[in-house]
Image (cartoon, rainbow, N blue to C red):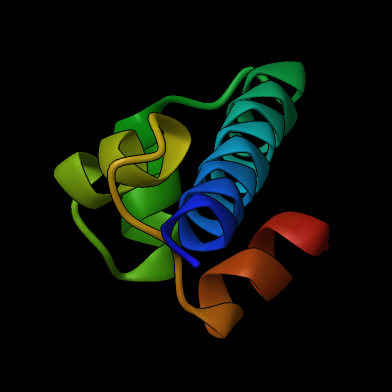
Length: 68
């Protein structure tokens, strides 16, 4: 059971890293700073940093903003 839980946590961490990397790629493709994205989304630059580094997971409205 512990092995299964460890595998699930590892998979979630891997997915989070993929998302974090993609968010950063999308921002950089548009040549926009973290500060500007934060201002456009109504969040702090620090929050953008955390999303792009997999420290925290962005809420759905932020994901939708990046999707546009």
